[in-house]
Amino acid sequence: MTTEHEASEAPADAKMAAFETLWANVEARWDDEKAHAAALEFAARSGLLPELGGRYRKIRESDPARADYAKKRIDALFGAAMALLQESKLPRVEKPTKSANLLVGAVCLLLLGLLFWGLFGRHGSH
Image 1 (tube, rainbow, N blue to C red):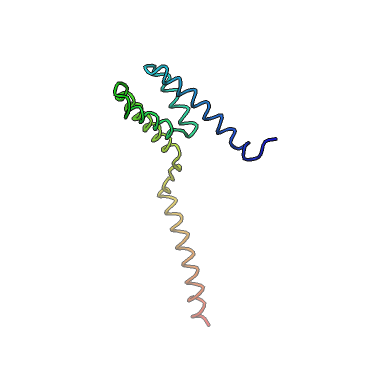
Image 2: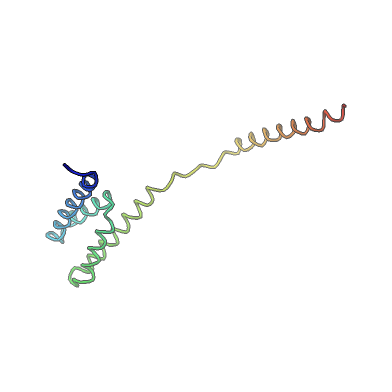
């Protein structure tokens, strides 16, 4: 019998297992752009961009032979993060048209006119 906590961790564990497999593929096929792209795509969809960035950063700092390419991969990672940020923005609210503004203004003037007529117009006749 699994507890609720264990059940909620299962998808996260499966996600990390898949990520680890993709990362092992990156390490094994360092010069293969497709391996890096697959890891980046999965990390972006799974919320693991910081984990992927950290791994590239470790390589950049510890392996001079692969440092330049790791830096390029970090740049690609930032690009993916920015794209995700743009996607998550709220949709832009369109400005009302000029005719809509005029209509609202006319209704407001009409209501103000009725208010003043009600307050002052009937008062003078009594």
